[in-house]
Amino acid sequence: MINYFDAAENTLRGRGYLDSALKNLERRRERIIAHGGPSGYPSPDFSKPYASTSAVNDTLAECLELAEVVREIKATEEKIQEIDAVISQLGEAERDIIRLWYVEGKSKDEIAAAVNYASTRSIYDLRNTAVAEFALRYFGAVALPSV
Image (cartoon, rainbow, N blue to C red):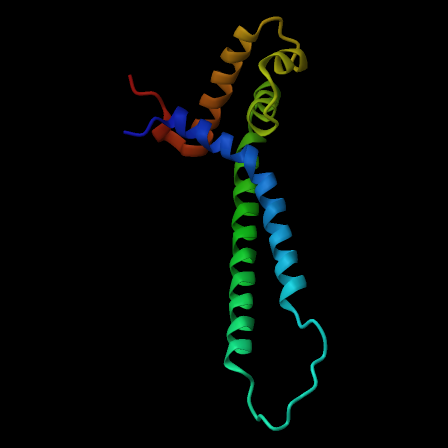
């Protein structure tokens, strides 16, 4: 049986890394585009009425790699939007704690100061409430605790 609280935490932890993953993917896309294009205008060799197999294979491999990176970028953007849409449905305190704890990776003391709580113990209570609410909104009724 799935522990939906843990699954929600894993989803939220992953959200914290998706922004940097997106930047890395975009850099990969730019590298492929920059290095995959022709580096100059070669003189045509009219003695050969064909393109070399290795040139065709290299170009095809670069096109396939670019297409895969573009798919990965799209999937990452969609996942960020999906998670952020659920986070936006939470109350302000819950949104803040989720953003600070999971997305920004702040320390417990920094979180307590940011949300004006005196102790980090109450931060854990607020975090537990926020994650439980996120789990319900993200996974639906199956995340309800069974009695």
